[in-house]
Amino acid sequence: MAEMTTKDVFGAPCWVNLMARDMAGAQRFYGAVVGWEFRPARLGGEFSVAVLDGVPVAGIGALASDLGVAVAWTPYFAVDDVDVAASRIRERSGTVAVGPVSFPSGGRAALVADLEGAVFGIWDGPVSSGWRVGVGPAPAWLELRTRNAFDAALFYGEVLEWATGRAGCCEVSYEQDQVVLRQGGEPVARLNSGPVEMAAYTPHTRPRWHVHFRVPVLEPAVEAAVSLGGRAVSEVASAGHERSVTLRDPDGALFTLTTAVE
Image (tube, rainbow, N blue to C red; front, side):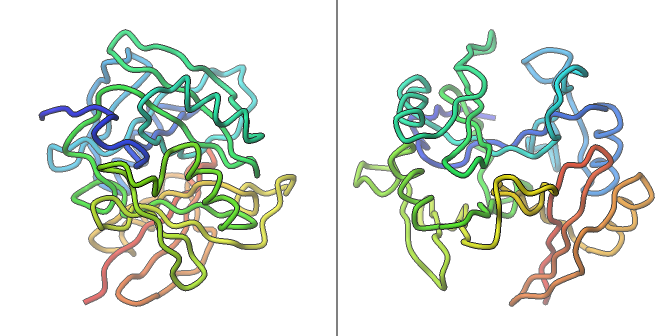
């Protein structure tokens, strides 16, 4: 698969990653639920790449046992320079939790949080040309659940250079009370205002980035999740031509499965 760099897709989502307490268990779970296979990542033995139909989909790594952090799916956004982007985050009262760090395989990354505490990553380096939200086996879309989508759009726009007029940058629009991010005209992320609180006891009521994965049929995937220790945290919802349900994996990571309705 040919590779591009983050300079080609700057500002756009370029990967999603899960740091699991039980990496082997996470592979069994997601292999059964969404049909992924796994191969070693170039980052080392504690990381693997999920593959569907021969195309990389997501990363799963082993979380250090002494780290008392919640397990969660984390989207990464492409930036020209991770150090510059990290400085922008600090200047706008966001948080840089880890990094920037360099990887032997090439590229630099940082794990960060926005004004409301929603965690995301920034990446500067090579990206797979076969990975794009909404296309093929990649995530169907990403969703930011935050208190004020307009304020969040200003933060991310300044940090990630959205809607700057620079050739190749992402476009932003306001549709039905949502901020919609598009890459090449196609929606890749939605920012939604809602009743969330930074100090909420349950993770699904805190500001956060949320990943939606596509499956051919919803019910067998949910049954597989429950049989392997996951559970549904929402009812099946229908909207337009989509049916979806939000699940929690055995480690506690939240995600949504969605399927198209004819």
